[in-house]
Amino acid sequence: MSAWRRSFFVLPHHASIPKANLMDKQCSQEHSNKGDAFSRVVKPNLAEPMQLQLLPPDILRDILSWLSIKQFVRMSILSREWRRLRICHPDLVFTKDTFGINTAMDIDKSMTVGELLNMHAKKLELLNRKFIDNVDSVLRPLWSTSTTLDKFVIKFGLRREHKHYIDRWVSFSITSRAKHIALDFTSDGSSCDSGFDKYVFPLCDLSGPNGSCIMSLDLGYIFLKLPLSFCGITNLKKLTLKMVSINGGDLQRLLLSCALLESLSIEMCSDLSSLCVPQELSQLQYLRVRYCGMKMLELHAPNLTNFVFDDSLMHTVLSESSKLSEAIFVSNLRVLNGYDDVLDDIFTELPAALPHMDTLLLLLTSSQVQRFSNTRDSFICLRHLNMNLNISLYPDDDSWVMGFVNLLELAPLLEELELHMDHYRHCSSNLRMVTAAQGPLHRHLKSVYMSGFSDVSGLAELAFYILENAIVLERMVVDPVTGMKEDLNTERFYSVSKAGSSEEFVLPTEGDRYCLEEMRLFAKMNLDREEFRHVLTVL
Image 1: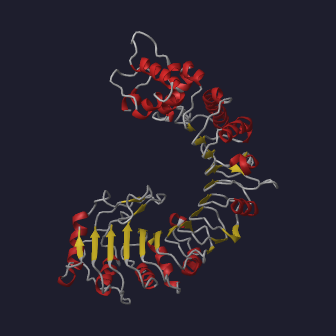
Image 2 (image 1 turned 90 degrees about the horizontal axis):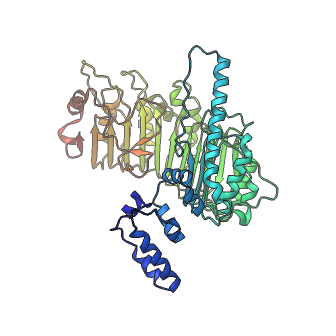
Image 3 (image 1 turned 30 degrees about the horizontal axis):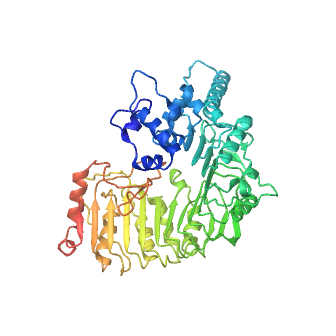
């Protein structure tokens, strides 16, 4: 099969035919004839051109499935023979990279603002025209065929003015019974969510039997309005909305009409001020709400297992989600340190909002950790805590430590703690006396991993406190190497226990090594005591 992937215009003499295909060819005289034709192609006269029409359609389609979409598109545009055969790749993914379109612009600093805007508009118009022509050149031979797709993706900065072309592509994807449809028009300067130029997606075309094959729908920079006759996307399991204009009532109707929905992601949907669905979303397992500015989220999702949210979401009620195993909280306000009073309300309500949560991952600054000092309700089911912490205070300010100790106290059943800190380094020449922070005993904490360990005030005291008060502690690892970066826009989580489970989680192994020996010496001088050596490892 690797030989097919390298070249299928002229197959090498030693290329083998799949046994299953040979057996099929022997089932009838017709298949036998096809097998003979295939044999003639496998052992061609290299002086003669390849006779593609001699290959059965199922073989051609199988060959195409081994090509990348870029190779397929290049071949479809350049080869008249392949266009005449009308064989379709099962995954049609059209992006600027698919066609090698360069959207970068050379700017002349001597230009006025008006000239720059005019140049930008003309360049954008040319790029859109080129993208549309390329997509049409691939799809045009397939309009009248009975094509079956697995995936259909359009990702380019198109707008409502291109409705004629987009409508045709959407109709083709539905007719081709695509399982996964994505229309992402957020690129190329659509960060300003005006909404006036958004493409109006024809949801009515997916309603009922027409959209019965669709399992996932990914929409970006789209306007959605549910028609009165909308009766749901029958088998939809995954819905992703990014910069989509839709009101809360229509979104509620949409969710309730998709009975099999398992995954819902809502990002940068500024029209949504709240989302309250009184009826049960019985199949929903994954929920992500980011940058939406919702004041209220209330869902009845008994099978919800994963929840991702941020400090734009003020109030959350998921009290019936008894199977919630993991919640991820990312603070957007960590890039605006000092403007995070809103966290007082969020952290105060968090234990009651997510009472069944087993694993909690937090991306915060050290100043925000202090907010947990005001929290009184307990995380009664929390067993795994991972905090990615941007050090944002002066080296001698340890006020954040008591907030962290209070957080540990709020999780009496906690068994595993990971604390990963950014690459802040303060290599002080002055030695200080380290004493354990004050706090209660922990009767369940067994494993602790700290990366980015440094002499910032309070950190050694926190480690010392855990060593003394975690009475069943089995292992503590202190690692001076920092995986986290200072870039506050990075939203990947550093984790030891979850590394490799997805692209969002990485190991903190290849990071900043500044002052590494000094930090390792500091850790050993203050923590490496006889009574702790059976559990402590300083890397």
